[in-house]
Length: 569
Ligand SMILES: Cc1ncc(C[n+]2csc(CCOP(=O)(O)OP(=O)(O)O)c2C)c(N)n1
Image (cartoon, rainbow, N blue to C red; front, side):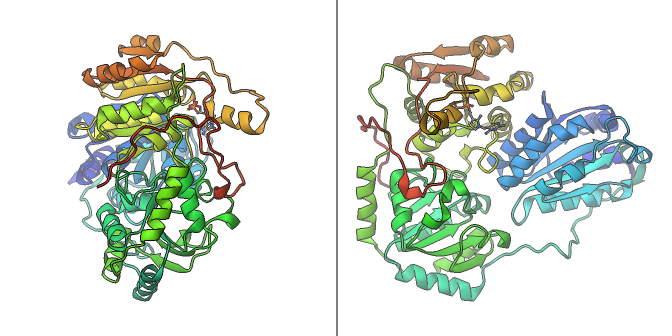
């Protein structure tokens, strides 16, 4: 049957199971928006800034495991998507981004709002298309979704000229793709699996470091099985948080720049590092020459380009993490490593996460722990970027994959609010908490309006320290407290929320923390808490930039460490 290009886009979205998209219109997109009401199954969320459309699609994708969809008009609308696309690219998030383009006859003439968005996004997309004829639209969309979600996931961009949306063409949605050059690795090579199993069975001090690849491939159970069979301690990268339950007896937190001291000590002493679905980001490795200096390394990853990129590897295994772990498990012997685990527990005693000091002020660590208590660890927690992000990673206890959503690779301030919005839409049954910084929050604060218009019940906890805190921390530690361009004047966030018809409270004292969290949770809709925290609190431990992980600096005034962090499973 013949349909317009705009109808073909909608039909294809439905065929892909898309039930929500995040977008912002413009002249060249009007044929699409004019058609959209014919397809009530597609919920369209009108954001206030295109960057938020991409971050919301990203948050939705991370929370659900589905492909996130966003749309922007040509020119400035399209370029506003760029940060969100780059963010998804670096964190391997499946996304299809549609952009409108000027009519075909105007392309290449510097027409009004013409921009070469496929050229601009080439290095930050997994693939991109310009749909130059209506008849190929359905095939392109089919391929785009396939590429976005398979293999190592990532963003795919489709740029569509206005007249392609208006033109009629025969429509039938293809039931398969034909991409001969696109290969997806599945199981690992049998010889390498055997080599890996031998090393694991013989290791005295093995250590697993797990990343987001475990979450992407849904391999949490397989990871747990492997760790338990061979009694191997597990640490996770920032983006791997939640892939292994943090209250498990074999869980030893996160290593790297703001990782736990004991996780970094474990990395320093291990004789076999089993890296699973992670990419040796420099925030994890510290100085490469000092990274896991005594260890042989097994690296399991979907993307062959990641293997050997940052650290040299003894046993490379390319494949889907779930399939590889299943195959590997068959070759593993049961083991104990009693002394090694005792050693890690000793380090955990000697280098505990610094806790909530007796302080007259309000400490962010205390708030995060109260948030954990109040939610029972059952919420989806989304963060901005900065100190509050690290405190959340350190002090909340994550039990489930997909319960921690944060911008890792790009470290994008402004990610939090729109990503939380996307996560809540994707998982409406879950409590979704945004822990944000006063700086990060102001970068996409306009999305409060979207929360209200679409009644998206995100709970917002702002750690208001009056600074671009993480940068101020570097100035404090490495630039003699020369606080230039980091003191931050903030609006009264509660008044701002009220202006958007969102209720909120300001909290200045410990006793008010728990009641405020309860009030927010009980409210049927979005709610904002403005926590006035200690302005000059720093995140510890910290590995100074350029140093080895083992050179971590600890909290200078370590006093109270009484909070029960873990129970035994
Ligand atoms: C878009 C963007 N610009 C600049 C930075 C550099 N940066 C990293 S953390 C940070 C400060 C964040 O401040 P805030 O959101 O208030 O959080 P806090 O560190 O105080 O918890 C800055 C400026 C960034 N990560 N992203």
